Amino acid sequence: MIRSQQAVPSAPGAQDSALAAQDSFDSFDSFDALMEITSRPGVVFVEGRGSWLRDQDGKDYLDFVQGWAVNCLGHCPEPITKAIAAQAARLLNCSPSFYSEPMIHLANLIARHSGLHRTFFANSGAEAIEGAIKLARKWGQRYRGGAYEIITMDHGFHGRTLAAMSASGKPQWEHLFEPKVPGFPKVQLNHIAQVERAITANTAAVMLERSRSRERPVCSSRPTRSCETCAR
Ligand SMILES: Cc1ncc(COP(=O)(O)O)c(C=O)c1O
Image 1 (cartoon, helix red, strand yellow):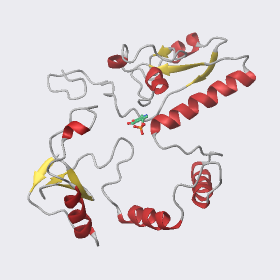
Image 2: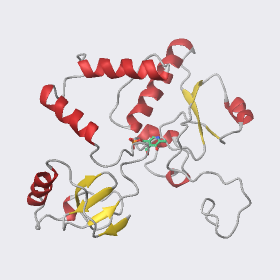
Image 3: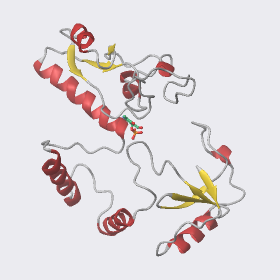
Image 4: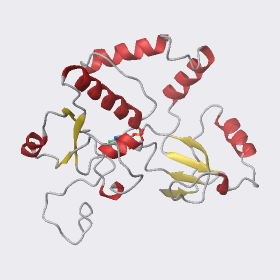
């Protein structure tokens, strides 16, 4: 992240929202009221526009993250803020026990453009993975005599719920939050023979995500002192 004196380009209403955010940030507020889950720099951001973030002191930063993981859309893109504002004023937090208009519309758009038939909406990647795990286990229960194992890849990353962490192959997580959710035998990525050998009567599915954003890619070039990928 780069700090700059250049102003965050303003959008209509941005001044008001920045003032409101500054008003709501009380100097007596303490970082201690938040559970610490990761180490963060000691700045508090109040506004974002495109590639830029502004902190509570009005300092601007060029943000190379601009979101999170696969969801890097820049800060407050106008089509998204407009769509959210319009929908929030029309129908907000409709129970998932009912159909809602945007849910049907978006599922149809995804089906039309992806070639896939059905969408399961979730609030996070980890929940989507949980949905996939449940679906595979349901299939195993129904058609495979109770098969429940899902073969996953070493160094894979699937999110931070207990099952998603158990399915992930991050070495740093090996002894975290034990015991793990059972049923995720691991194999090496790109080793089809290993996958074949791991398949048993208990196998319901093989799972891998095409995006492996939380792991260093395996470097196929000859390692050098300055190789960023293999950190040698
Ligand atoms: C490949 C992959 N799978 C799953 C997840 C989990 O998504 P979320 O953080 O939305 O739960 C991420 C998040 O970084 C991811 O990169």
